[in-house]
Image (cartoon, rainbow over all chains, first blue to last red; front, side, top):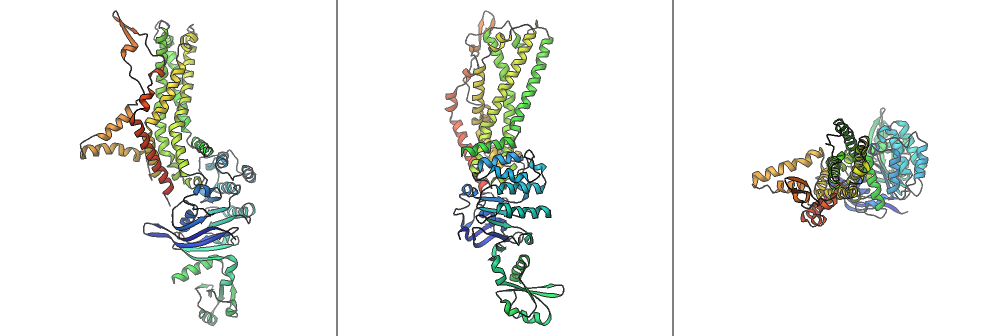
Length: 285
Length: 307
């Protein structure tokens, strides 16, 4: 596996606030990495550093380039959707395609036109005349038509209704993704992307609190739903977090074998959202 | 690199349609004024002979001068329009994309910040004057055509009186040189406006003009000098592009009457003094200031993190 993104001790401060604090990770080719964290955790700052939009301390390499110093070269192979509202509102769809075609060596106009033909977007329309969902469709079509190695999505579906959100991720997987391409994505709607991800990172207060492949999660983490005496016995095994669900106790364990918990209650692999809460709140407790 | 520059400048024309709409609107107004102006003149009857273009009793040199004056009057309106446009365009160039957050999209494409800011500088310094020039030529043709129609109605020979007399090539060449020279001469202002539009969080117009009002007042009250104001006025009021012209060159005094001399320069081109312009240290100083401010604007666009 080749490492597409490599971060070593990356930090970024705004005044006295450390938005990203000594973060190290690698993202390999062909992965879909979810970056999960609460508001203000440093997600966007980290993405901006990866995209070369902001300077940072430490060593950061994306496709073998220093992103901040070689942003132009980087952007030939990296695509980026910040959120739905960043396409210029005054531009027409065909002007936008003209522009991307002239500045982007890896953009296929034919492919973009083909993708847009499936939507209700007309080439003469101005962006301001399109609905939020259509703007996102347009942006994704453009990006899908770029033969890029890395796609960075920062809350790409915020403010969209459920139909557009489902369609967005459907198109992302069917039209964009293949084993040669890599996706780095942040979102609050964790449940919707959970099944897409191959890898996940949790970030809180600027620090990485988890970095794992989705396949490794069932081995490392287990959730036990139980009550009464069994709960008491399970607590001896040092759960990282405990919560109440319908009068029952749900305990989350890290690095505890399923055989050890066998017979104490119902076992399952925690969902990303629950695991995130367990890691963040458990660490705070 | 060049391909990017062309695409980026095209983008400026899509976004700022005022760049060609403004001169076209002024041209339309001037053309309408020309029609009504001719109507008024023709109402006086040809005996009154106040229409400079229809003044058949003038000699060729005087007619050429009269037409040049008319053309210059038309141009000057469009030049004023060009500068209002340049001010508003430069102040908006790096501000609008931050205001509507589309900067995040533009920066997701393989264009450097220098390429982007340079395209805006080139638009203000070269594209705007070139478009203004094209519209000026168009307006001249319309106005002269209207005058020709009027002359034709009066039974005069417009081809002879206007088109053969008018030093068109000389006037147009001089106009083009003047427009480009004006942008070079005023380039420190363009640089300043671009810089303001790159850094200000709100009201670029106010932020750009407030220092021009406040600095001279501070200088006067603190140091007692008015160097800033002097520099400002020298810059705005005296473009060192023209050679001096004495009254004697235009008029001669014979008997007790003034009349047009033989040495009347035909066309505006002979009034320009390019060696003087390019030899002026103020020009180069201004270009350096413009370069520094543009570099500062690139730096701000690159390093600023608005989130």
